[in-house]
Image (cartoon, rainbow, N blue to C red; front, side):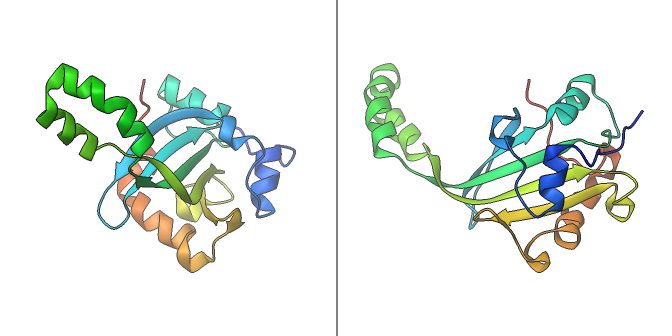
Length: 170
């Protein structure tokens, strides 16, 4: 059973007004990912209560009102992190293996953007029931840089999982 996204839902109201939803940074972690190459970023996927309940109950399609947020940061090395870990790695694994692990150690650097998927199966039927929106520096990105056309083309191959390709990390 799906429930319609309520206009009184503060997250839906904020997103409809072109704002990030209040409290989204406190939503539950779904998963994390790292993208290499030119993107070179770390990503955290968060879900509101509706999305997390659907993930935990393995409910597909996601119910209306589900919101999934993807936060991204540049992956950067951290000397502070490396200095703290180096002695442990060297003691446990030897210098060569410790150095190899430190070379692959990254932390979240500058934020790049935030992307949201908002489920309303009637309102956004043409994009699988999802609204896609990207925020750069807290402001909605122009449609050409992120949104229904750009984002939906990447999500279309995941139609069998309701256009969501992030799995819940338990």
